[in-house]
Length: 112
Length: 116
Image (spheres, one colour):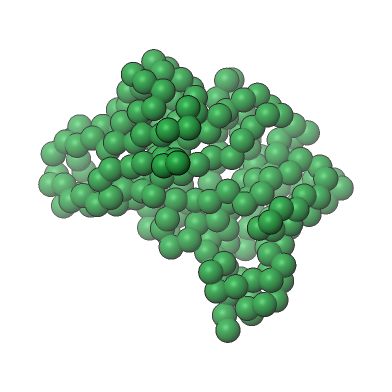
């Protein structure tokens, strides 16, 4: 199972881009990178996922390095409501089940 | 569109008591999961199910039991509550297709359990 490493906390000024890094040096070729966030003990919320190419949706962008050993989640214009714990997850596939393994994530604090 | 519904939202149990945490989803998802989250920590998988009648252990199954008699429902049973089971419990579901057709999880809002 590929493990991920994230900084425990980051700060970002409101309106600026928040760039959250994630290392996953042991990722295998068929494992996807997923990002979720958890706002104040609510259930985690899916943000974005990718395999090789960079991805963008209405919430964020995901940049994956060419060697796939690291990625960056970008919130282009962070707001106070983006304050949350962000989890970088590499999908574990075992048999017929597909499980997510959550680490401790990065606590992003967006400030005025 | 309710998604994943968990009940109750809060519960206080005494040591040795039993209870069932309810989880229902209306998205016809095959896969369902139970996670627990201790304060300041990430989520740990307790049990999961790939369809009605099929369940399997996750990372931390001891002290818990599950059943999956229907696609919609996936209750989690605590038989003899212990203080170590004080946590927030999240239920989740997804379609769970193969390697490339994988859809994101939908999580419930959680059940905050305290064992005293």
